[in-house]
Image 1 (cartoon, rainbow, N blue to C red):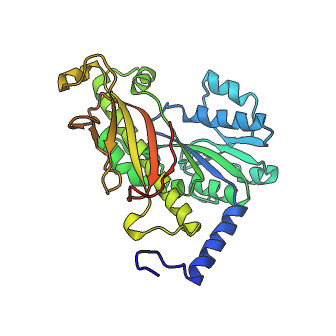
Image 2: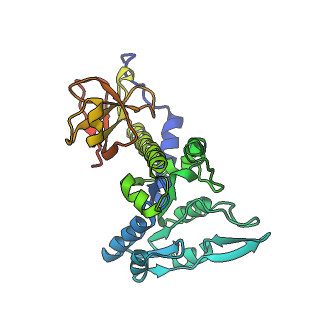
Image 3: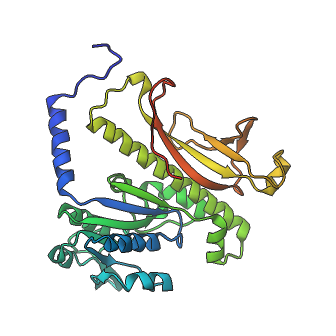
Amino acid sequence: MPASIDKRPSPEELLRRVQAEERRARRGRLKVFLGYASRVGKSFRMLDEGRRRKERGEDVVVAAIQFPLTPNLEALMASMEYIPVLREAYAGNEYEVLNVAAIFRRHPRVCLVDELAYDNPPGSRNPKRWQDVDNILDQGISVITAVNLQHIDEHQDAVERITGKRARETVPERFLRSADEIVLVDAAVDDMMQRAGAMEPVDLRRRLSELRELALLLAADVIDGQLENYLRSNCVGVRRSAFWFVSRRVAMRAPCCAAGAGMPTGSTVICWSVTSGKRGSAQKIRRPWTRTWRWPWNWEPMSTCWTARTRSPRSSALRASKR
């Protein structure tokens, strides 16, 4: 066998894969709606997903939702079955805890859980809500949940540098990577500024744009890991010199103010991001016909496309895109 071709997996590795597949087959499926900031609309997307599944005939319940509800959320909740959370107090603090026992007794096909990063009071079955969700998945119940970028433990330092704030409640990135599906809930920066009613639009625009970029790169990196796991579990033979990877490409809209940088006034310029070998390094934007440009914070991403391919240009491509 040529040295450039991966060797067959060992019996121990095959056993580990079989056990992992058996555990995966018994567990429910996890879908995560990831938001880059508060009020981006992740709770609405979560409930709307539950509504659509219920209309298709699936057994869906809501196990946790953040109150008070907006009129849009109230309309969605009106048609959903709700298992109330348990309200507990400890050391002067109030906690909302998933009623895991009631969920197990009810045993729906799909369970909606908002605010994945919440903490449970000391003495609870699990210290974190995401651990309760993990137990629910082990019972064969699928979970649709929502979380903001600021609550991902490994990204707290980056978010704190941007916002000056650090979230107290967190979820480890490894749990996010265990999801069967991740959906980035995107919203235009201008819309987010209107919802916030900010008094400092320039500073807020910069911060929201940076958070948006971090969320885009995180979602792409998670998809990268999912693709690698899929290829590995299906024993896809790939040359070591041409291993599979995901390249992040972000389409940008250049506004009129970009004319000062030498771009056409009043026109829309579609650009593409340069991705180097290091993950999370898609920081430069190049026009297809000219020189390299640094990403200005007043540009807005229009769509995101992730392309899984080999490094060899002659190799066949497997594309997974999100428009």
